[in-house]
Image (cartoon, rainbow, N blue to C red; front, side, top):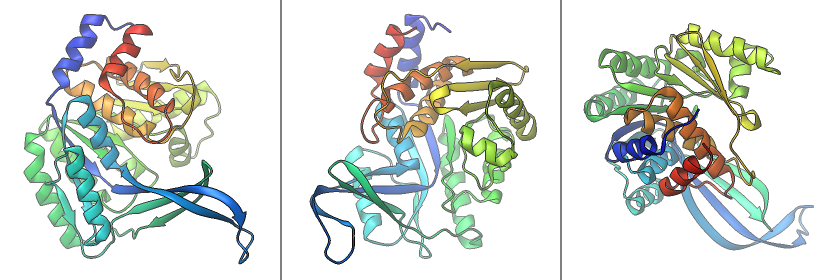
Length: 329
């Protein structure tokens, strides 16, 4: 599909200032980097002599950062603990100029943090500090109240599920019933738990592995992928299913029984981390600006290609994305 240059510029101008509510699991990505010069005398493991420590957004917070860089005005609804890592996270929010008014600090869980140890540019180990709880009635009521406060002002809503306990089946249903009643754009990036609970989404964006597991189907060829895409469309009563397939690109399934396949736009793959966050952010931003599903998907596909060519989790820069769209139409 070709998007005319004037149309590209119009969409990017229109998305500026769009208020997008990101509801989902937020976390911190912590990196400890250093050099490996010896093996520990205590066990046959390398000793990493730490040279640097850095903190970055993870999960739904990275989606919000992508939206901010694009020019939107994201606001997040998420859970933090009442701990030191929550202070680190809120400092990152301030530094990025993001709206942190929607976060709730809960007593029954720590702030989720993933610590990666990198030795000589090699990922050695990851340590996750988290507690996953569903079913806290008091907290659920607090989340609903916060959602009721924020949602009326949103041009679109993103549900970013990392299965950390925020998006329970009841809360998902509550959000989608509101969104459909109020004709809000609502896009979903699901995970394994509650995968089939997102009834009535505007765009449902799983990846190929999640889809195969949820449906119990082998997805080894295009015919099987077509079958799975339309089955999801039917079972979820979604307007669009957008299936990300890694090196095989993106497949889109619509209400009219039509499917479109977009080949991958990555020229070189350096790091796929965060690509899914970029796809859902760009897709939603473009839809809020009035793009068609196919226009938004083309822009998201190009954005994924750009961020996969970078090392680390980085948001896509709008000027680079525009240039890439114009060059590769």
